[in-house]
Image (cartoon, rainbow, N blue to C red; front, top):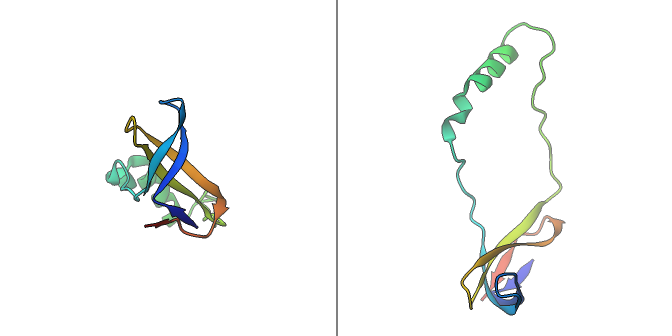
Amino acid sequence: MKITKELMAYCPYCNKHTEHTVTKIQASKPANPSRGMSVSNRRHNRKIRGFVGKVKAKTPVKKLGKKQKAILQCKECKKSIERVFGNKTKKKLEIKR
C-alpha cells in the first residue's frame, strides 16, 4: 500500500482540512521487559511443566493481516493524529517520496 509523503487530511485541532506529513509508526519495546518473569508467569510455567490436570495454555492466534497505521502531523498546528489505512491487509505501508 503506497501513500504519498504529504496529504490533505482533516485536523480536529484546526477544525479544517490542512496539509499533513506522513510518518510510519516504529515498533516499540514493551514498557516493562521484565514482566516475563512475573509471579503469575512463573506459576503458569510451573503448572505447564508439572504433572497436573488440564492447564489453560495460551493458544497461538494466527492473524490474517495487521492494520496499517501511520502518524499524520499537521503543518499548521504541529499536532499529530494516528490514522489507520484500510482494514486488515497483508500489504506493508510504503511512503512515496
